Image (cartoon, rainbow, N blue to C red; front, side, top):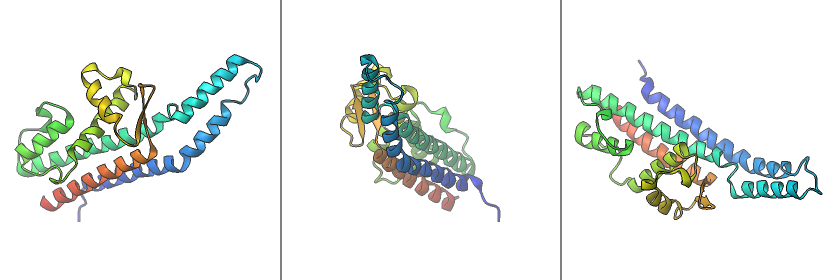
Length: 211
């Protein structure tokens, strides 16, 4: 029996992303403590400038600013798997139904195009009706801030800033330091991965069973 690798590889990529989050969960606290000690190594204790720099670096570590790239990578990777999987499933259904119009022909954000394409063109549910769509949209926005603005609100386009800033500052597990740096907690990274994984596994199973 021939195995369609398009279905198998999704599970594999999700597993690798989950292992990355586990890696962070096991090691990030230790990295944090080790780095707090390291910033004080080799400085001159009598030099006020040295002490000031060390205090600043320690504060950045405690706030999560220095290590924010590590948890941000988990969100970026998880969303990349989401987009690639949705695209693969859309193409699979399109070929099965012999539909000429591609999802890339539609306009809008990825999530807007995906929802319209599955609903109006493929006539196949992208996700269950009970899906927390606002949460999914927030993940997409967060990924955009992390990937394209380096996790800095100052670099988010003005047209998007107010909308993004409002939900970021009211969401548990995500903090905004100094009104600038977006810091994702380990817990939020895990919850986001599990949320996306459940949606994708459901989608893949339904597509595989239908076609």
